[in-house]
Every structure is written in C-alpha cells, then in structure tokens.
Length: 319
Image (cartoon, rainbow, N blue to C red; front, side):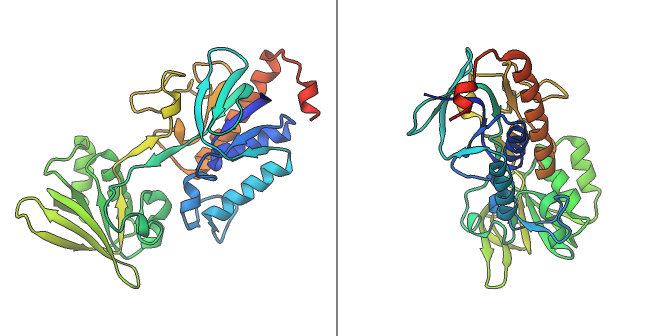
C-alpha cells in the first residue's frame, strides 16, 4: 500500500496551487488528477483575468504551467478516478480505480464543481466558440454583441445584468413563465433596459454557422412553434454541481453537495481533511479565488501535519 504524508484529490487552479506549496514545503504530495486533468480551465480558450498575463493565456497552457511548477518542486502525479475514501481513522485510505489503495496522513480535496448543461444539440460542440457558463470569464469577449442567458434563478439574473456591461442586448430564456430568482434579483434585471425576455420557451438547439453562432432554437410553449432567437453568444446559467459524490457520508456537505469548511479556513469537519476551490465555493468560482484557497489549504495542511502527525515517514520519504 502506498503511503504519503499528503494527497491532493483533483487538480485545477486550487489543487495545483496546493501541490506547489506542499511540494516547496518538502511534503512530496501525491496529486490524483482524475479524468479531466487541469479541471474546467482545460476546456476554455483565452483567460484574461488571471493576474500576471497582460496578454492573456490559454486555459490548457496555464494549467500545464502550474503542473510543471508543482512537479519541479517534487509533487507526484497519478491519473485515476477516486472510487472511495475512508476518513474514519488515520492514516486515511483512498481507493483509486485500477490501482492499489493509498494511505495518507492528510488529504486536500479540490475536485471542483461542474457547470450544468442543457444537453441540447450544438451546446458542447460550441463551448468556447460562443457558448459559455461564466459571464465574468467571457463577457468581455462579447462587447457590442447580442447575447442570450438561459436560466431563471439568481445566477441567471446576475449573469444577465453583468453581461449588459458589454452586450447591446441580453435576452433571458426560461422554459417557464415564472422565474425562480429572488424578487430583488428579478427586479434588478427587469429594470435594466438592455435585458429582454423570452419566457415559457424550451431551448432546443444551439445553432452555429461557418463564422460563429447564429442563435438559439427554442420551442414556444404557448404556440407550439419553433423559433430562432438570434444571438452571438449563449450563456448557460442553470447552476453548478460540486464533484463530491464520492464524499457522501464521509464528511459534512451542505444541501447542494458542497464541502463545508470552517469559516476563514479550508478545514472540514474531519481533522486532517481540507477542501479548496470550487468544491467548497458557492459564490465566487473564479480561477484566482480557487488558486488562493489552494494556497490556504496547503498552509492549513502543513500546520496540521506539524502538530498532529506522529507517524515516522523517514523511510518512505527516502524512496
């Protein structure tokens, strides 16, 4: 059985930042990458809001740079899917599909959250080519364009209001006549003269042409007729799902499945288990905030190991 002082489950900006800090502290972290090494940023194109890159940087390139930086300081990487964890006693046990079990005195969870998609034709094919799930990340690229926001909750209202800073018009599409958003968020969006409404319409297909998106095909539930809502970009704002299925019953999760941490820290209810990035962030969900919480997790973890671990790791550290 493999033994490690600390294991990072998941990559992305949070996991890789944690790995960099842990490796520089000579803790030789094992990083389990999962099925999408680098996280959501590997599916994006230009990133212009991550500090230090005045001309922007491609998402995959940023993640590769961070991975190389962690490796440079001694982090080890393992590709695989975590099937199960046992946090009932130390050392903790981690089961990775197709590999021998792993033991660790500390664990950092950075498995992120996945944006929910509609599952309609043309959606996945045009991610990064007009389809987005993050107005803060991509709104700037649609200056002077017509946009569509799909959703009826607070997130959709917030995205629509934000996008009016760049777009000439933002149309909110919702499959019902009623919106789930809070009244204050609805009022804010309705008072914005750039926001228009296409309610009681079911999205059917993202329609693209040779030079970009044409718009969104919808079904008008009142008339039963299909319509094409013209737009240069489509923002899907129907929420996120934290990647915590394997943690059910293992540590405290909130009602939406996000890892619960002690305010101001990355500590979960299990001493020695930490959570960082979007897996515990229900509000910001930005690459830079994820990286910052990865730094916090590494420092919390290092402090924990200094004061709590009594296992003699001298032999395993020499391997």
